[in-house]
Length: 491
Image: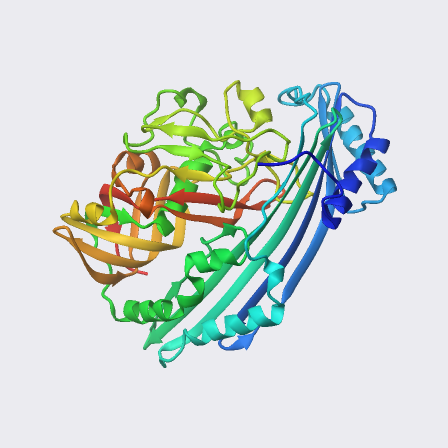
């Protein structure tokens, strides 16, 4: 996947790598140190109701120094990347390590002593920079215009966001890791209104994010989606409300991903299980004694942490602590086997986890985060899943969610539904919602789409941590069929 580190690979890598190199000459005396250099360059383009919006451009660079000394752990972060700024950051990290030594809830684990050298960047087929900003804006304008044509369409927008992220990690043991990739997020929506009602249809409502370049937009069908999105918004306006009752529920991949995120991903984060997040993001109904035997879902449910999926939002070779990442099962045949916990949390809890210590930027320490968290496909075609349903509803595209602090009881709303009667996909319904309890819901899983029906989704803004960290997460999933779910209508 990568090559030996070579700082002369390109101008950008030389610039970023040189900051880490300079720190090695001024690093403080301690048991272990690491420096993480992060540069994020971003651009957001959009057209709203036919008018180009202001262009948002960002270029952020800084470092996080981590020090382990005499059983203490300390951090020092700065955007001052001069030698003097690096010295101050190292000194601050040492000061904090000295202050907390003997007072931490757990002794920091012994860092990996390997002097790994790794350099890799995702090279897209069509880089973001290969098309001018003016041309991208012009094409967004044409796409947005395709959302109009009916007087009931009262609001419409087309947008693109792109982030070029480069991370270099160097350690006192001689390790040097560089990773670079791009993230692209398309956005498309149309709102239709008549009398006192408005219905909105979107292109995934922020759940469509890919690692790569402009080629991902062609793969997703983004440039041709305008008429469909507008047509479905108008269709929803005329549709009846979703019925209420206990019935089968078929979730499309663009709704499955948020169900996975909220009711599997967050409950399995090990720092949350250990209580670290209870003051802000909440705790978890999962406890340490559940791993190895707890029935989290039906035997069809296989969930993997897989940072090696090409194009998925959180693919990487090493996490932000510099630990090599690999594919691992979190749930196997419905049984809970492993949490989402990085090296520090694993040492605290004395359990095996995964390489998911991640930070959203240079000014945040690593915490346990989802990365690529995927439901493995089953063996059913979509039409086979529909054929199993006597009375149910298909729901697409999340529009709202609510879940309790322990990530147990939940309620989700979707943009669009379709009734299923006697194995046949029927008319569209609006304002579809459902509720349940996490483990009970996943135990009701009775069908999963096959590999051909699997889709890659995710979110660019998963929030967690104090201070808050919003980070990108990937979820690949097929459609899923659930039995006896509480479904209800209404906005």
